[in-house]
Length: 137
Image 1: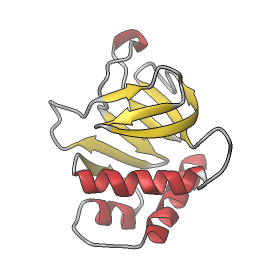
Image 2: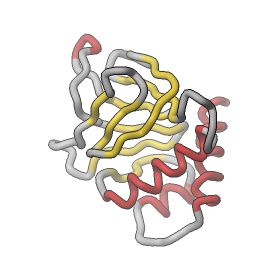
Image 3: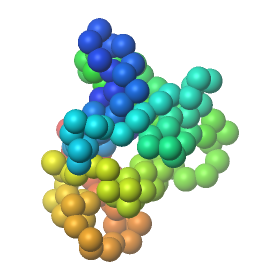
Image 4: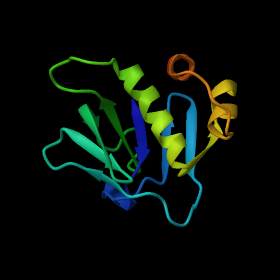
């Protein structure tokens, strides 16, 4: 799941992505005092971060504590890439936008995300899988 720190006091949605987490991968905005805009699409089928819409199949409000929500990326008909492939696509897109820094995570992902190095989508997918498995332990 994609976890987003997007709520203020008492779990009130704040329309900003203060932090992101994918498994043990932690991402913080490069401009900490101006985090990217984050919106849940009203019908519950998608989220939008910094202008890009990502379809979701499920969400959990106040995941872990009232500041965080969690989202399962995907489409309701179950066709297309798996959630882990969608998370890899999300990470690749996010890195290209240069909005976040990786502050913790799988070593290869951390080095790639915070650099200008190029890697294959398959390698990013592998790191996402490792990060999710590490979180589950």
